Length: 129
Image 1 (tube, rainbow, N blue to C red):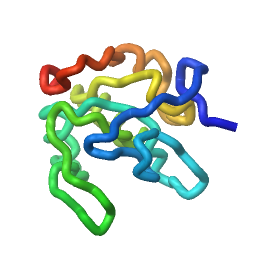
Image 2 (image 1 turned 30 degrees about the vertical axis):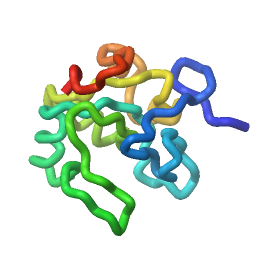
Image 3 (image 1 turned 45 degrees about the horizontal axis):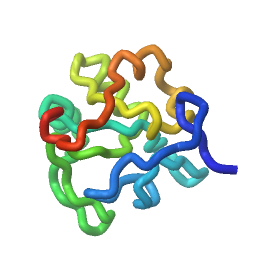
Image 4 (image 1 turned 180 degrees about the vertical axis):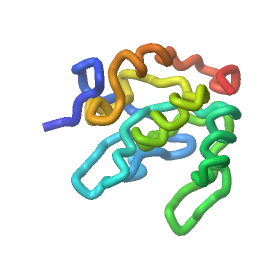
């Protein structure tokens, strides 16, 4: 059975440039081997990236050994649910694309918090950074 999004529908792709997802398939799929729960489809902002760096989660430095390109403001990315919540609590939450956010995110984050930061993704993502 296909994984569902937080809206109850089919999980839609989060991003392909850079290629995101725990499985690097563009989806925020969360199989049993994804212990981090890379479930929240977020659009990176400078504030979110800086907050994550300040708490020891550097998302900007490329890590080729993990097929990780390093992120920039405007990049869509499947964020670990606990890390997104951490930034939310610090006032630095990244925008969320609900249709691309895996329903398993609700194991960690209340839907109301995700809805509070929901965005429609414009064709030019740089306007969100």
